[in-house]
Amino acid sequence: MSWLSRFALVAGLAAGIGGVSTAAQAAPASAAPMLGAAMVAPQEGLLQDVRWVNRCRPVVVYRRDRYGRPVRVQREQCRRIWVGPPRGPRGPY
Image 1 (tube, rainbow, N blue to C red):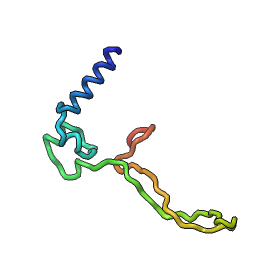
Image 2: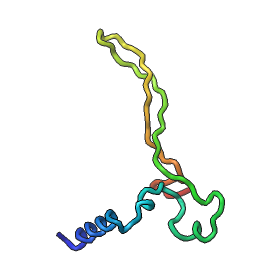
Image 3: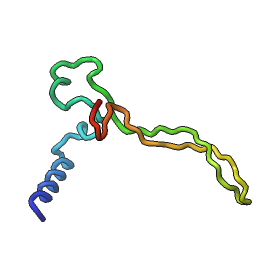
């Protein structure tokens, strides 16, 4: 076992045992930095909830019944989308 993997194992165990508080582990994602401007000058609109959410919409699909006849069926199609500032290969815009 290399020193890097041993370090990762020990750091993970320390974080799980009590190195990081449970409130910090269960906190929701935020676009604000952990320390810095949010702590020094709390302003309205500085913090923003960021997360992945499921968005579902009804879609009409065609299936075949047990006799082979085409049947129109309405079902929900769900996608996971990012709610928050833009992110991707082109960076924030």
